[in-house]
Length: 429
Ligand code: AVJ
Ligand code: FE
Image (cartoon, rainbow, N blue to C red; front, side):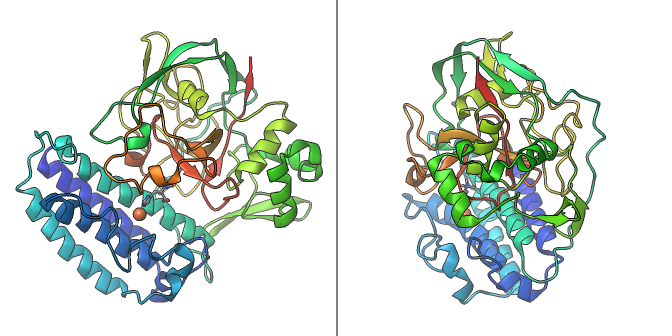
């Protein structure tokens, strides 16, 4: 990438961030809408400070901090306390963003990308900062869906294409064998996606489509939420404590259900992938269906392993980047799409929609790959490795295309439902 291309991408990222918050009043920006989420103005300040830290400060000498000390440091100020902080107005934030950006561009005019410095080589640190802003965009959308007061006036810019007619119950099969997982890319991939490594993978079958609302309604109608035998111990404890009996944002409507996406309430469409279910609900559904969740390794093989070329593709359709034409990504559809809607979104193994629509829960804990090395800071991945978080794959309609690829690993607590997450099932074969 050239300096001009990077500058254009930084500008495009900022334009989108500001477009998303444009319909909001000062109050909407300042209040903490939910203990799980930051006030939106905090996200904006944090985006700017992260950019300043990595694209100005940490380029001047040794890396001093991984997160900016002070107000916008996520560890000094955990989400639940951020509503009580002294936060700026949007106008003050815009001034700050512009001032930081001008120093970033000035600094960039003097950097070299053909260097041994891993931070700058091939523009890595710029890609990291861009992806940070993209990820916070999705966080902001979670907050907007949760928001108190008037629903968010979503700037819908396009609708997904109409679906081809498909058989929703088909499965794809991997016959077992040696595959390569992860990537060695050093220009955009995160440390947790590296290194690429070989594994032997047992045969498995995996659903061609994500689990739909229609599938999930069957589970509900068959008493899925009340059948102890379908739930793990932790899942049953969560179910009893939360008293949940439907996906988040679903509301009873006569003898059926309706659901809300931002400012739009519709009856639940059976053809759309189910969204806003937690890991435990996904796990119980899979047991109900006589299946299980895929591991993240199986997921990645189903999304990108090309047996004909014996290599792992970056995306289901090949190595060309994600666009809103190829998959339901990039936010402005503000909806999921029925299985089969995007005709390019098929993987070599024969799975549909591995990228976009909803993040997919996998059965894997978030752990480092063999040979993992932290770079450039431990607070992105390393701090979160262990058995507390489950891996999610594939991105959602609310994910910016630059923030997702077959090797991308997201993670969250198994009880979280405000994220744009669903799942697909697998089974041993
Ligand atoms: C990768 C989505 C789990 O939002 O918690 C943002 C990304 N890291 N700022 C998160 C992140 C630092 C992270 N996830
Ligand atoms: Fe962040």
